[in-house]
Length: 130
Length: 135
Image (cartoon, rainbow over all chains, first blue to last red):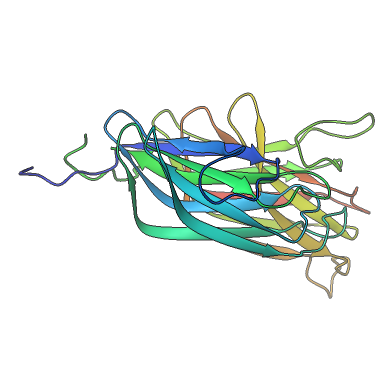
């Protein structure tokens, strides 16, 4: 057992563009890798979901992946937001996590249940490496 | 693995002025448009950004401010500010002003924050003040 606490040492961002529709929730189909843990593990504080144009009425499905198995971890209901334009901001949401640690070898991944009408969803994880 | 918490050290205020316009939300630049403006660059050990102030000395059109994270190669759309169609600044009317607060916006070294306006301002420029700290 450690005799000193472990702190995140290096800021990290993981980002990926989620585009391809995948109706599954069991880890099959197209799933994008957003954040891969560092060699000593990582902590994710927040995940931002930012549309670049016009998402359809859909859900973003998030997984933790241990290198062999997908574990569904969270879902974000996008609803059916307005399209972004030069005068309208496109959809944005975020999830804040108090205790989302990733051991080395694990990753945070995401998919979307319905193809976007236009653009993509930027899935951006903010955290740090231990 | 770190055995002590990482504290931020230097307090930073990054200032910039956004001019021109860019209708894209992927960092690309069409003919006649302007690339997103660098408004903050991470320090050598990374940085954390607490807030971004947007204020104008003039008259923005009905537009949106797009905010990107840039890793040195790719633009990642991170946030947008809907400016609406505010009144022009004058001797009796304050100019558009808005603050975005962020709680977990860390930037690894090599990353920067960049911003653009989707519509050319009618007059003046959009100024930014980024409050943050280096690790």
